[in-house]
Image (cartoon, rainbow, N blue to C red; front, side, top):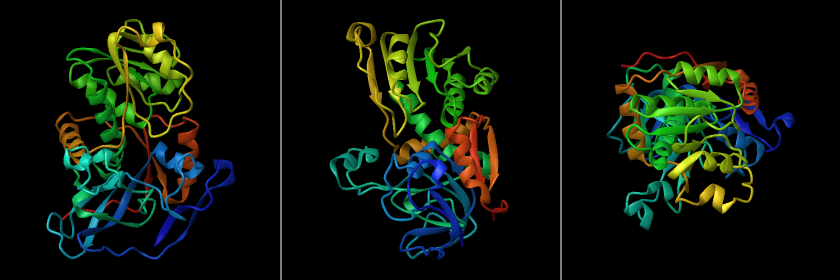
Length: 339
């Protein structure tokens, strides 16, 4: 099968991604084989290619927003059958027995498995996934629309919950890429006022089109104090900026898996009055199921830019340079009809 993999992590200028042919995977017990039609291109894939996230095994295939059709299953599968459309997301496995898993926090599992990091992902014509960690894709979305929901959407949903924005509150969003453009809609449709701070003029225009009250530069002060904020941009310098924009008792959620160094914080200006900072780590399957149901019910609009399979490296370059408005997706093969 055709696939892209990380050959030698490094700057994109060194071409860390390599395209070639790999042996087709075979599903094990309680695993699905998926013919991938579309895979989202996530900033986490960029961190993997450049070495911010060291690959867990040599020549790993990136991609954890894969949508496709099941051509066959391994032994013991019961939730899905051949012909079903499924989504393959970032969290690909959890031990189920550690303290965190037992209390319902499988995103904090001590031995998790991540798609496109621990196991090969969706930058390939086929991928396998543990049946228990696959998602049925809501029929209201095309494959291209559904792909970014599987990470950008789910992690944005968890970040929104972690931000503790009150009903009818004021939410600040820093950075407005794939995840933010989904989360902003979700917050707006649930009654929050959304204030977007981002360096991209195109992203600011999209934010206003999607219902934001305000859109300004990443380092500008919003026009009102914020009840909550989410930092999507992987820029540590924005942490004190976002904290200063919070009202008393406000919460900042940091949504990225990688963040540049945070400068020293001024306690009086940035943390006092019970402002708090929360990190966001992966997601649970409950998050995924809740979010996909909400996304379908609220008719979220997905802005996507599609790339042919051969242009995966170009897609990552555009993500790195913030040339994407909305979400980038990699078209692996023509979309199939679902039985």
